Image (cartoon, rainbow, N blue to C red; front, side, top):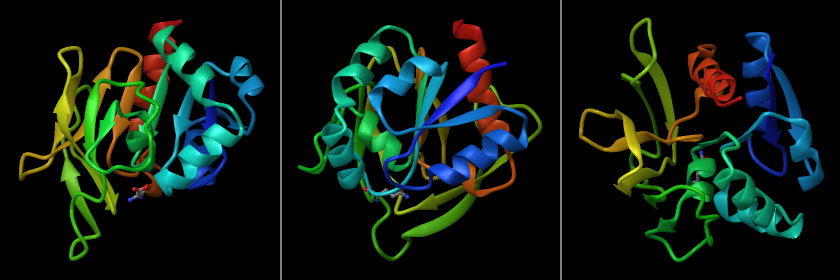
Length: 193
Ligand code: GLN
């Protein structure tokens, strides 16, 4: 059984832990880089990406996450977590960790549709559409050759991508009671070990 770390510096990490535990996956809240060696993969949650990146640097996660990501350690970023994992942002801030070969636009849906829900199809996910919750969500505007687009919404915006051991979603699967995205990540971890 896999043990999944949830980066617990800011944002909705508790909801991720609950979503994992609901389907019997052990969740470990990660507050220091040393703890990364105790888990098989890591979720970077939604929240405020500028604050998350600031805390990542204060607690000295940046270098270890980059080394681990390059080394095949599974990491999944949701919403702000996707922003954190990007190689480049349209915004000047924050300075992303450059884990994945994606260019991301923060707050891509503007003020008038800050938040919305949509039924999306995710490649590799069985049993019908997934109800995705978007809250001041980013989108992926450009992907590198090794990046697989696994979900788009109706207007064509890319909202989920995978690059080997790395996964990023613009929406918040931890805010619904459908844990299929968490199971998909657990499967990625299992396949990588
Ligand atoms: N808009 C937020 C940011 O840029 C992300 C929102 C979220 O994680 N729900 O950090």
